Image 1 (spheres, one colour):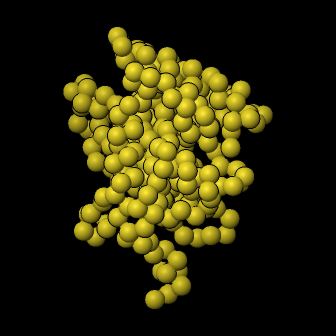
Image 2 (cartoon, one colour; image 1 turned 90 degrees about the vertical axis):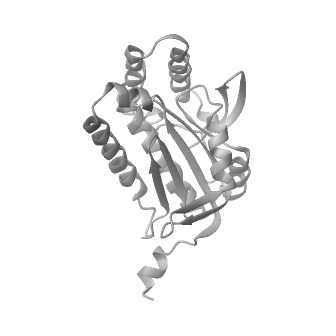
Length: 240
């Protein structure tokens, strides 16, 4: 086996980070839009996801993130639990969340950590972190992606002072409660650096524009998301 092939080889079963992202209102989209429009939207999502997956860290050449998409659900997996895989995983999830919001596609998700099997040849995907991420995203009441306790614990073990783009201890609106969680924020929501304000404003406008297609209690998702995006730039001490 060549060196390059060995570098790219993923273990079928290992401990890894797993994100589950749900595209909200997908059934209504299918009802309102043509089949071709939905198909083009899914291609665009897949293209953006692939672009974010292939971001390289340093001199390393291997692919550190993979994903699968089924209808209105997107699953993202890290290669392992290395710091480089974690950074690539976060960048992929953050970039995808940003792209979805800018395209006017509401979504919510969660990520967890644990033993996960990815057997692409046999199309077998299962593990506790996928279940944990799925169940946690069901509780979320804003357009965002939050961390399960299993992921928070592992991140505290491997990050150890290294910079990884999370918002920690964010009081996440959940169905029936508010609870502090680690959050992967959309890439353009970070206005900590000069020149980022314009991108942040575009992102906020995209979220506000979702109101034109939303009524009733679902607008609470937009209210909660606007609040989430508005405070990220003021949370310097909680960005890790």
